Image 1 (cartoon, rainbow, N blue to C red):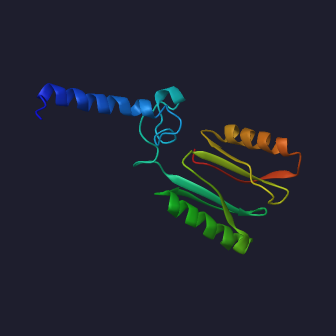
Image 2 (image 1 turned 30 degrees about the horizontal axis):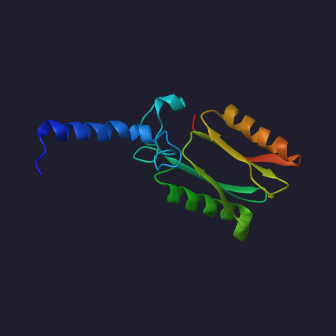
Image 3 (image 1 turned 135 degrees about the vertical axis):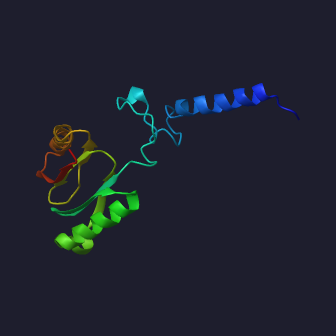
Length: 150
């Protein structure tokens, strides 16, 4: 079967132009990994490929551990767990979240019953989201970790 050069070029263009559109379809692999300008971030690069730095937070009760600016997710998660253990959390330390946002805040409800958290672009934004999640619990809630790279 022969394909003309024009047909091959057209098919290639169709494949490359359609890829970002798949990022808008829930359930596709790209849905949570490709940011389109419509998402308000103004960047079409995948957050997981080349340049995204990882952070992670682990906690045990009101003891927390964190790792920031890691090259990959696993490094950040392992570092956060070890930091939590080193801070006195021991075997009770568990991963709360890993993230690629510039800012994060984690709270503890009832000294470790649950850990509402938020990540975003500004510290005021993430603190507000965490406080809102805490308010829904109607329980004792305190922010145990916050970080913003700016």
